[in-house]
Image (cartoon, rainbow, N blue to C red; front, side, top):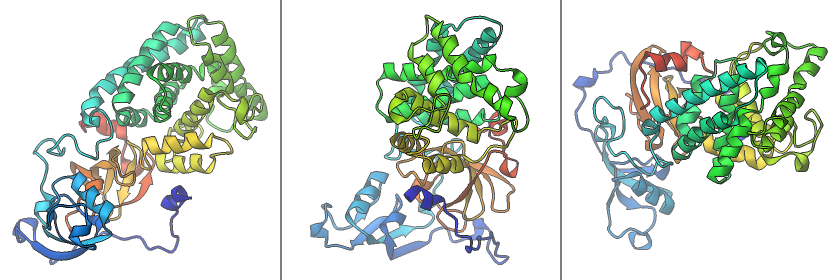
Length: 437
């Protein structure tokens, strides 16, 4: 229920509109240092740079050795949050808003408690681009060869998947970001690439071994190979399918099984996944109407990744929806269409606001999510538009650090939008020079 509450909007709530005080002084004329002393504060609003001068419990009952504690790192903040409900703090407003080193937009300390993975998303991004481009070429060539009567080259598939696994183990956010950049693609091959990456993310969350992740990635990359035998005018039809066309489309599961059963160099389980990825745990799927205990584990994982990518990618017959809305749809279908534990693991892995999401702040500013933090509701993001939806100087803001806007208000996410909102195309921003790594 928590997930639905996070996304449920109050229809009676009046949106906050950005306002500009005509009497406000220019930033350069403001007082350079504004000291706040002995201010009572909820611990969830604490930020690095503050000094805690009083607790809501006696100091001697706390885990801290000294009275008065300067919050020098996120770990210090977490320690206070674990011990207290509210505290009294001293801080300097301007010191808390110091910029990171010029030209990077990144935190001065590369590894903090908000870093979840082996490497930062910035450090992994270039490597992820390389493996994704190689994998995309591989799967595209693979599908073209099959259409022309060729066979699946299992060795090439495994080579492409291995790179994806290595990258996702180091930091899945980079790969999740790339699936969003490529979400406008309508090709079966690109969809298969995205599903492979997302499936590996789920498998990692389920603590699969590296070998299992590679097997899962291969199965996921080949899950839709049967569509190469479905007439292209049906696959690419810009509108609802007729009953006859739908039956023909559903045959891709059986076609996929047939193709992969005759391919010696491909993991045997790939045929089962191709056959069962549209089965649903309540027995309402196709082609056989299998129930949960009869559906292969990897097919259940691929089903979730496939549904998410379809919802968040533009299709020939409909526009994409936002990643957060897609997650809400998956969450609502847990236990009926999709394996409940796998859905929860998937959401926990990619975050409530997945990398590549277009988000709008309470103050009206618009950003693109860069990476998750330990606080799933407060990711790191790149500000793109100001409060009146005009292009802004791009800078990275870590919402988990309670960073504030020009008016001193802590940034909070109001809602999410699908790719294309406000004229924002994530791939266009990438090509135009927005750098992740």
